[in-house]
Length: 117
Image 1 (spheres, rainbow, N blue to C red):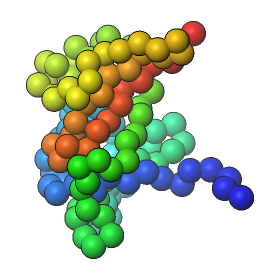
Image 2: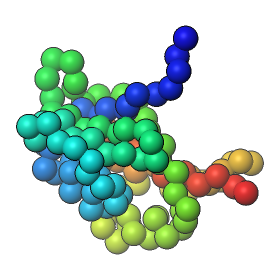
Image 3: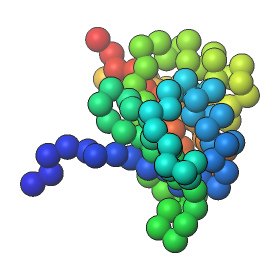
Image 4: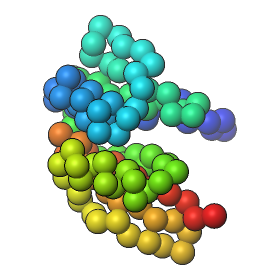
């Protein structure tokens, strides 16, 4: 039986470049670094990691997708546009949420998500 999610990991081709995106554009705070090749960020109790390419971790054109919950979608969209982050999908709305999808420097998709009250 699965008890919880231990971590999510995105393979990246260039850790410093990816780090600038995840820390600079998205505002994540580095929690730990393993030899500069595996970086972990705590997101309210769940670990999101980025790692350099190796035989087990390759950036994929249509790999997994992570959705980060935000308190202010419009504010985050403005911040990302100011930083010239590439949008894969413009802000959209569903009956339960609002979201936008951006791409990291390797093309991995990241959903910026805000639940409706």
